[in-house]
Length: 380
Image 1: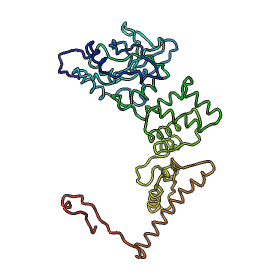
Image 2: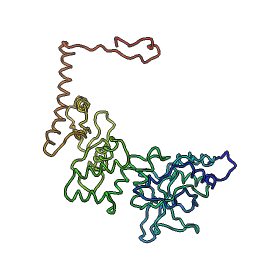
Image 3: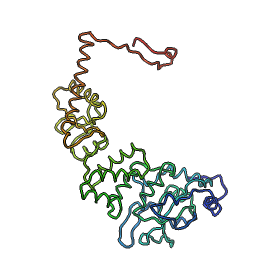
C-alpha cells in the first residue's frame, strides 16, 4: 500500500508537465532510425488510453499478443521496482531531469475501446513507471508520443532506451538476444534479408559479421558481444553456423534435450549418471581445465576402478577449430589430461617415494585474531 506525505492528490499535473518540458532530455536522437515524434513536446496523456502488458488482439487478423507489446524477455513487470517508483509518485517526487517514458500510437487494427475510452497507445519504454502511476491511481501520464513501426519497437526499446543509464529496470543480455532473434524471425526486417542473402551464397563469414554488427548496435562490451553471439548461434534457426562455440549452460541444455534418462548428480567429480551406469564428466578445454579433469578422473578411478567413465567436452571457444584439424584438436585434450596425471605421478614419486625432491615450506597468512601480530604463520 502506498502512503503519501503530500496533500496533493495527483503527481502528473499540468504544472509538472511544464517542469518536465523545461528540464527533461530530448529523445529525437534516440528515435533516429527507429521512428519519430508525433508531438514535438512532452504530453499529458489520459492513462486509460495506454495499453500495458495485458493480452491484446488484432481486430483484423485475430492475432493475439499474450504480453501486449512488452519488449522484455524474462519478466513482464518487476513488482518491487513498481512499488519503489510508486512511493516516489505518491510523494510527488518525480524526477523532471531524467528521461521520460515514450509511448507509441498503436496501428488502427490494434486499437480498441475499453469502458468507452479508445485505447490507442502502447509503451515503448516506461512500463514500470506506467504501472506505478496506475497503482497510485493517477489519471494522466507524462510521456513522449512517437510513431514507431512494430518491426522496430523491440530493438528501439532494448538497444537505445533500456540501457543501464536510461531505464529504471535495465535490460538483460537475454533481452538483447530475444530482440535480435525476433528480427531474425521476421521476414520483413533488414536483418533477416541480409542474413538470408549471405546464406544463399554460403558466405558464413559475412553472416557472422552481420550478426556481430547487429549486436554492437546495442552498445555492449566486446566480451558481452561475443557471449551474445554464441547464444544466438545455438538457438536461431535461420542459418547453419560454421561452428558453435559452447559454454557450460549450453552444454547442459544440450544434454537435457538429447541425452534422455541421464540424471544430474551432486558428486564433486562428475556431472551425470547414465541409465547404463556410466559416470559422465562435462568439461570445456579452456586454459588449464585439463588439470582439473585429470584430478576428477583420478579420484573416480580410485573410487571405483572398473565403473565406466565418459568425458564429454568442447574445445576452447577461441580455438582455431576447423574441419581439417578437428580430430587433432580434440585428441589433444585427452593427451593433456594424461600428461597432467603423468606429471603429478612423477612429482609424487620424486618427493614422497624416492625422497629426492625439494619439499615446499608451507606458510599460512594470518587469519584469526590471535595471529594478527604475526606477518605469516610458519611450520604448518
